[in-house]
Length: 205
Image (cartoon, rainbow, N blue to C red; front, side, top):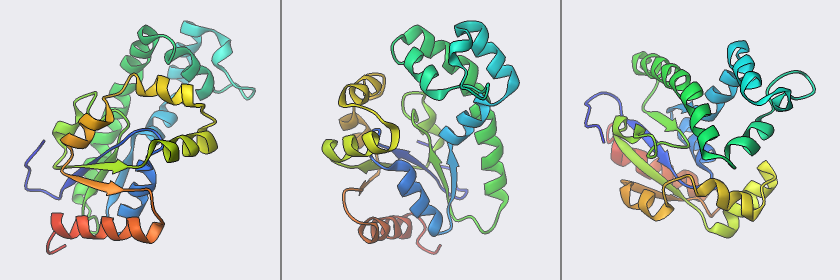
């Protein structure tokens, strides 16, 4: 973990369905800027050069009816074949890293931004936690996480287990974190946890 003296960078950890993006949005309410790696990666899939490369690799079955990349089709390929997942990551991750770095500099220069929140799914797996000043683990029971991914992503319990197989175990992520936010309750409860956490990180913020 970094110990820089600039405005803090907060990395969010947690399993699928834990609500990292939801918690990131609560940080935003307190004046933090959020860098959402999923949104950046989604934008990269719309780049014509990336689209053409994926079609060259996997054929036109990865296209949706409008001719764009189908994220669900890509996910089906890469989460059943680790070699294809690595191939995709080598294409997309450098692009996402460049955009994250660009956004960090913008947020660092903005006096309105109290802290920078990194919402990155593979923060530890890719060693990106080293660029963070604080790590926060977003916790939620398995039953609740499964309910969320069923509702929001159409995942089954088997799909959740398959995705988590490629990620660092949650108990390790929790131990690596500086703080834990319990995201099993209502918004007011979680919002108060975020407020208290920020008051400890930025006492005079």
